[in-house]
Every structure is written in structure tokens, then in C-alpha cells.
Length: 126
Length: 295
Ligand SMILES: [Zn+2]
Ligand SMILES: [Zn+2]
Image (cartoon, rainbow over all chains, first blue to last red; front, side, top):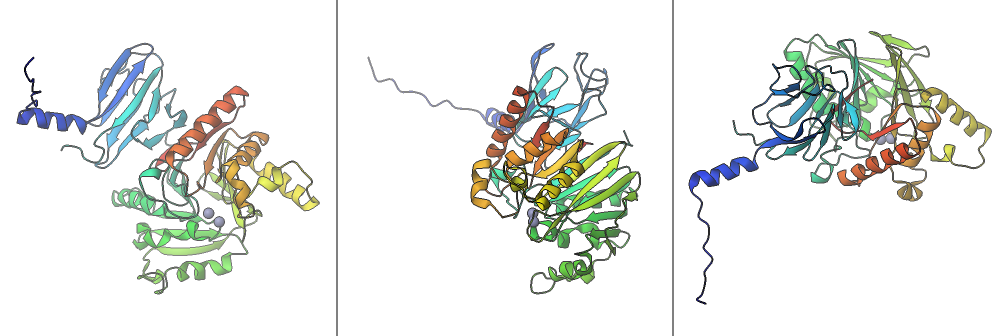
């Protein structure tokens, strides 16, 4: 067997910046009894979540209000806010009206569990 | 929605601000809690948490939100409850009015105490440079009404130098702010003096059936043993008393500066599991900075 040299994988500029960009994204990893697993991208905020078709994220789940929650960034930090929903928002199992989000916070909206992946909080690409 | 009463934690840490990576979630700012219904804004204490609150309020004031009249209630004047006032932006605005309340025993001294922390020895700007109109009040014996809120108080006898506990009633709901108190001796099994028995009964009556109780739960039970007489409660005592008084939601507060987010995360998880196992009706959680809950 001849000497096999492992080749360093070369990435082009787009791949490098694409990768960096991904690492700076904030998003929710979601898991719902009704809707399965999915991701909500939070870089284009504000994001409204509800059953109403006008919401930026439509979750067709009866435990969720028409306009349930809003996620926004004030330029530094991400917040989640209840829009007057019937069943409320639980943050790490505490019912809240509004809160700053921290990396790996568990949010519950109806039957959906959302984990905040706060990569790049405060470093949003504008 | 507009008639709802909201409680925001702007500062939750006890004793000294604790900035840094290990405390960013529950927060490093010292005591400041704001209760708000419509345009009525009540501030409890001016620890370093009043600084970010002031920044947020200043933005609202700039938009003409009509909340120029503020009410600031002091529990007591330990540093961690007054140190943020020099950094409270609305105090520098001439269209703002701040009503400042303290217990009758402290009221005659309060102005000097607050001015004192801004004398040139400690701070570059004197309190006389505040442009807001400041009105000092001694807490009245009868409950006072602000907007739709009714506010009453009692002396909190289990803290060195004394403290005050407050009750806000609105929309048939009850909020209690009762920080800086060492409850353990009063609620441990053992003999109590008649005076202690009265203090215990008075406390239970005051917090009874509260929808939200913010209470001192500074120490892990095992750490309290080394801090007896320091004027702060163990988490276990705070939880036990809240259960005994039929409190609905308990926000543990005045977090020990040495405790990291992971410690408080663990305590919250364990406490919620324990409450669920014994089918307790109490919902206990650790107050977290920049978090708003409904009353
Ligand atoms: Zn304190
Ligand atoms: Zn104190």
C-alpha cells in the first residue's frame, strides 16, 4: 500500500461565508405532537406564530391561538411575547407574558415545544 | 389586555451586581421589580436593575407614552436596593415626576441617604442635577390607591436594619413583594417566643393566597447554615412558607451572587418536580431578569 495522504478539503469563499452565516443564525428547533419536527428561522424577524394564515409561521394546531406569539430582536437580543393567546407561553415551564430568550431556552406554545438556538444573538447580519 | 397587570423583573440578584457569563440568564442586576397596569407604574427598589428599566422607559417617554408620573417604593436602603438610582435616566428628564415612598421610620432620613450616595466622595454627579420632580412620602397607615391598584405594607422584621413588605391588589388579584427577610428561624420546627409567633402569623396573613409572591430565597438549604443571621432565607424556607400560605406562584428572588445560571436552572427543575410529585398547587420558579409575567 502506498502512502495515502489525506487531502485537506478546500472550501471556496462562498462555502466559507455560507458556513459562517449559518453559525450566526438564530432559530427554533421545534417538536410538536401534531406537526412533527421542524425549524423556525428567526433571522428575518419579527416572526409571528399562530393559526392565522397571516402569521409568518402558521401552526395548524388547535391548542394554538390565531395570533399566539411574536419573536423579535431589538438589535441586541431576541424576545418572545404573548399576543394575548388563550393558552399562553411557557418558558422553561414558567408562564410568561414576555421575556428575553437565551440559548437553549425551552418555549412551549400549545402542543409545540421550541428550543431557542441563539447563535449570533447580538451579531445579526443586517 | 390593556387592563392586565404585568410584573417585570429588571434586577433579581441579591447583595451585589454579578455581571458575567455565568449569570447572564437569571441576571446580574440587583433588586428592581416593576408592576404596571395601564399608565400606572410602580417601581420596587432602585438596585442596579433600575438602570436598564430607565433606558427602556426613556424610549417609551420619547414616544409620548404618558407615563411621566412614577412611583418608587423602597423596601430598605441597603446598597443593593438603592445603587441604581444615580443611573436612572428618567430622573434626569424635567417632564418626569418621581414619588418616593419609604417606611415612617426611614422617611425622615431617606433624602439624605439617597443624596449621600451621590455626594462627590462616591459619585461625580450630585443628586441636585436630577431634573425630575422628586416628592418624598412616608408610607401611610391606610392602604393607598394608585390608578386601580391598592397598595399596603408592613414592616419586615427579619432583616438587619429592617425592611418593608408590600402588597398590591388589583383586578381581585394579589401581588406580594417580600424580599430581604430571614424566614428560617420563624418557620423551623421548634419553640417560638410569643413575639416570634406573632411575626409568623402576621407574615402568613400578609402573603396568604397571593397570586404572585416575590420572596427572598437567597441560599441553598445547605449554604444557609453558614449564613444564619445575615437576613436572608433559604430556598427551602421560602417554598415551605409559600405552600403553607396557599400562594399560587412563588418567584424566588435575591439570588445569591455566587450562584450560576446552571445552579438556579437545576433548583428550578428539582423544585418543580418535587411540587408535581407531592401534588402541590404551588408553582415555584426563579425570577429571571428581563422577564414579564401577568398577575
Ligand atoms: Zn438586598
Ligand atoms: Zn438588605
